[in-house]
Image 1 (cartoon, rainbow, N blue to C red):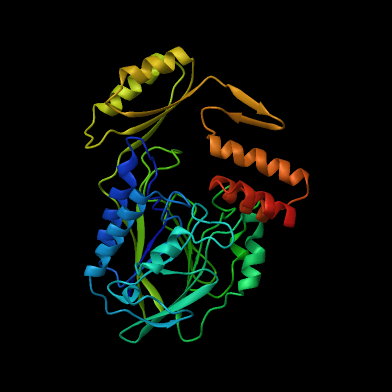
Image 2 (cartoon, rainbow, N blue to C red):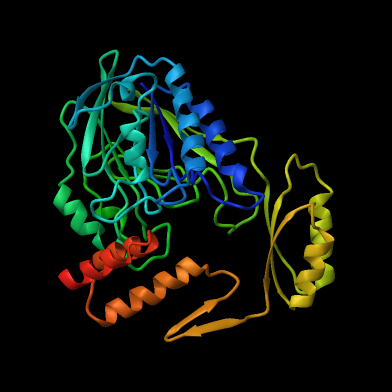
Length: 379
């Protein structure tokens, strides 16, 4: 049985920018290449927002419904819930939701909506069994939860390998071995005994052989975090043969924007390096991040010079906004992120935990001010 493992499609990323089409193009290419698999797994953050626009939803459904055209001999043989009939047509797509899609209690997240439309099977603290020609796999998944509650969620769900199956565990959390986050977990804190562990949320692909099993990180299909030069984007593919993993390989996406990160000490050096990049062939405008201590005048000059030729990310001289104990770079922090930080800090001062924060922010973000006040009073 052949398995394709994707993550972090971030459909809708770059709304109202020139990069808006990138996530849809990447998802189309990835799923088109994945159609040769018997089962497709997605480890969270299919969408970039917890409440996607109607345009993003429509385009996501158009991409996923295309997979119903392709036949698969793999069949769902065990599931903890009743599925829409169309969810079992074509190649089974099994997904968890990620941190970008997590919503407050009682609200349906976009991945659950996709399941109700019969386009995939959504897992959270649950599992599903699949069989093809006598080969059986069992996939269990923990969708994205606030980092500080990961261990509690793992304990509550009590994930255990299922006897008689090749076992796969999907999750969407920070792993300290790959992402610096003091609230993250370590690999040895994952539930034991699984044959394959699939980690979403981490945007750079990786593979790590474990004492028992293997850890796969597909990474994102588009660059949302510009951290290094010429990153690769794609997904993992492998076969399950006689209850063992075989033919593991990374399928690279070919039709994506090139990404470059350059460092320089002067405007002239910046221009020289950008000219060298643009001398090469590019089907799409490349993304160029410049790390240099530039003045605003120098930034404006460089942006003007390369307008229409490249998508530029330039960091200027250090300029900080001070909000209480918070110090942030005004060119990096969005209004939403700033609002989250301020609200979280004020709520922590009042002894309220992260679960309460997520509920309140979700209600406020959706304009439900009275509901947020009512919820706080009840808490």
